[in-house]
Length: 470
Image (cartoon, rainbow, N blue to C red; front, top):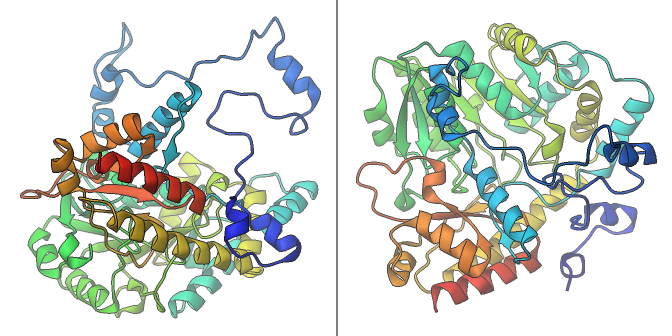
């Protein structure tokens, strides 16, 4: 049975745009685009004798020598900082999934944190109109003024604070704004406190820029929220930035108003910046979202990172933004000038429609994620050796598989990840994909993204149950 038959839709033409599109060209594949997407000349040109046939093999990954910063061949060596740059292991696992699928193996993937819905129709239509109107030229590095206005209105409304357009910088994704902010604020030797387990790019960027990355343990017994006493122990005179993420990747944990009040008090007392990653703020299953911007003295020392990828299923559009002190914004925009020049103009016009247009589809996405969350949590807790909290936000679960690993004779969650993929045909991510284990940490976890349809979730749970209880 397909998901569209199981899950409620909104009716009419709108509902048809909400169905997850599972039969379309895969951008990760090396197959030609389907007929009709590009003119016939494109397909024939790809096979022109002068050009040669399209390659069937993926682009080579960097060699171990690249990752270690060692000299490659007779060329001068890479910059030493390249040895400190990490990655997102989800993309590595996805590559393995695609390889296994190409070999004919059936895989249910819970690996990638990407909504399976298409972007809202009115947003796509706005981009098409902008293209037809010739909106294909450079724009300001900080973003189109009309989009910055729209973002300021949205943040003011959703966080119940007063934000002006000059506090907003738009980038080609939320990640570039995160990178820009760290580059603007960090000197070598500064310390960056980041959540662990957490989004791996926080640690990667801190390391890359020559800072000392200081992990802040998030524990299951605290529902993966910040322990303020543990945070205070991480703070030193060298602390420059604290990164918080709520709702969180990979745990789905959500910080409360009191949690954030405690963080704000420490930030004011010790005078450090806070980068608040709020990219999942609209994927929330509790009534009220709490933001650091709501606390006294935090607007002048907080950079909020947000974007369009998760809320509006616009991952491929590459649209994000930062909300920050107005005095910091020109510096972040100057980094954008040096790196990206500006963000795609017609995409920004579509983003205005996303924020100011109807939210029916975004709300539908959230409703479906909540149903999927309940299904996957209930299913995981029915598997021998698995325990799973019910997260309050995002679209991830982070079950404890310590006992399952023991039952299966597996050393850790990394072995669980590998065996589940090869033996059960289920792709999950090991706890160590989200940071090195904290000192004394003796539990094993995996992350599953439930940004996939209920049919896949049910089949994946069936396979995991059979795998764990064999």
